[in-house]
Structure formats: structure tokens, C-alpha cells
Image (cartoon, rainbow, N blue to C red; front, side, top):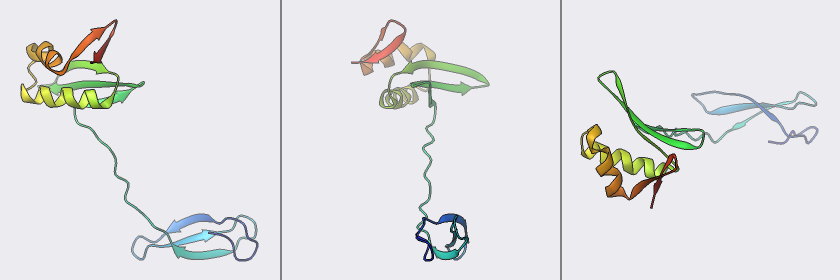
Length: 115
């Protein structure tokens, strides 16, 4: 919004949750204006059994108060596919190598790479 008095960009102050009318104030002259603000709900991406840390996607799960660490991957898509395959085998730790081989994942140096 632009101030009607001095033409400076207005600052948002507050929004009424019921009427969705917002209040704006000019930082220069203090003029107050009311207007509608298009508020879109913020959808937060909250993945299950994997998370991002320092650019790597880590797959792990807590079962009976014990952590089951599956691996760290370069991208989110690979982590999603690993979680899907691990759910198919009911998070059996002994099946991790077969899950990786079925997805075409192999170890290069210290990281897992999907071919």
C-alpha cells in the first residue's frame, strides 16, 4: 500500500482475524489506512522419518525408544524413496542393504549415491 498523503510505502501493523481487514501506517507522516490483505495459509512441509541437516537428507526412525539410523542422502527424493521402501519391509534393519540395492543406491566414499 502507498500512503495517500506522502506517497511512501505503508507498513503493515495488524490484521483482524474475523473481518480480515488490515491496518497500515505510514513511517513518514503517521497516516493510518485500512485495507484488505490477501492471507494465504502457510503450508509447512513436515516430512515423516526424514529431515534435512546441513544440506543432507537423513532417514531415521525411533522404534521402542531406540533410534534406527538408515542413512544420509544427497537429495529429498532419494530420502522419500528410501522411507517408502523401509515402510514396505516394516523398518527391518537387516533389510537395509536389499532396500538400497533395489533402489540403485551405493556408497561412494562416505555418502550414499542413487544411480
